[in-house]
Amino acid sequence: MAKQDFYETLGVSRGASAEEVKKAYRKLAMQWHPDRNPGDKAAEQRFKDVNEAYDVLKDEQKRAAYDRFGHAAFENGGGRPGAGDFGFGQGGFADIFDEMFGEFMGTRRGGAGSGRGSDLRYNMEISLEEAFRGKQATVRVPTLAQCEACAGSGAEAGSKPVTCPTCRGSGRVRAQQGFFTIERTCPACQGAGRVIENPCRACAGQGRVRKEKTLAVSIPPGVEDGTRIRLAGEGEVGVRGASPGDLYIFVSVAPHRLFQRDGANIHCRVPIPMVTAALGGAIEVPTIDGNRARVTVPAGTQTGHQFRLKGKGMSVLRSTARGDMYIQAVIETPVNLTKKQQELLREFERANGDGRETSPESAGFFARVKEFFEDLRE
Image (cartoon, rainbow, N blue to C red; front, side, top):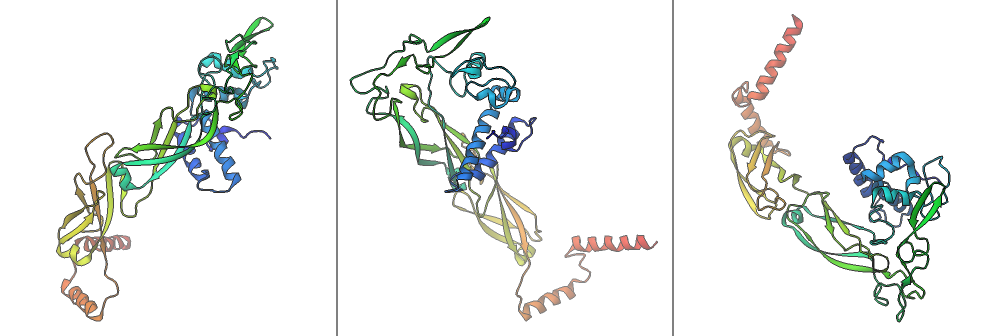
């Protein structure tokens, strides 16, 4: 079955910017993540496809190669569409691409650094309070760790890898193709320069085994939704002692039931009783640090009026400063009135006259409405 176009997988156009590609990836990764779709094999495959597409399109060099050659740019033995088979064996276009651009898919094939472990991703959701204070978290990550039986060498105890007789330890072999001499990864040792004659039974010669690793992660105060934290060398261990990959913690901040965050500032909609808004008074509001703040409400406060509490917002990343908190007033109209309360309001209405003094906005609006209809009759 032919692979779907990477741009179609992410739902972006070929001319999409790097930011548009990233935004589309984050949305789809959240939608199809296995944690949100437990037991759904189709969702798991979609998640893998989305990650594969983003891994290519986020990198300028890989994206350029994909735009020109399509999926063939990343398939062993593949080449540009329509080109003949050069008989490169396991190398093919990928080896040529290595020579042109250096690192390919995170590491360079063959020689030092070959077999570098894969990077890992861990999604962590925290509360807004934890984003404010920071957090010390412990995460458990399934990974490939060094095999203890062979100490990562891949060879059975009492033996050790020997120099590859095919490439004589260089990890590369050359082949003559007409006028060209092509150098590619050694097919016998996969670029390691050594072969294992007696592989370790615990890890089948890989030098690594699957296990779960427990790590401590420090989330700094002021962290924002979508922040990526890199733990260098905490990814999968490389093949037979090669360097490990990295672990990336992707932080998402859960919605809060009271506050809405805007960068370092916090917004909170607070309902204010009509009488308090009309006569003035004071209210107490919670703050993100767990305390309370007293807000003076002046007489005549209207819905939409904002009160600023300086320095009561979020922590600022890598700083001791804090943002501000904004209280948005929402004047609450009384409901379920008793007969006495209704009569008092009617008495107020009768004493209010045309309302120009007590309700200037509504009086002014209806005056303009009256003028509007009068203009239509002329």
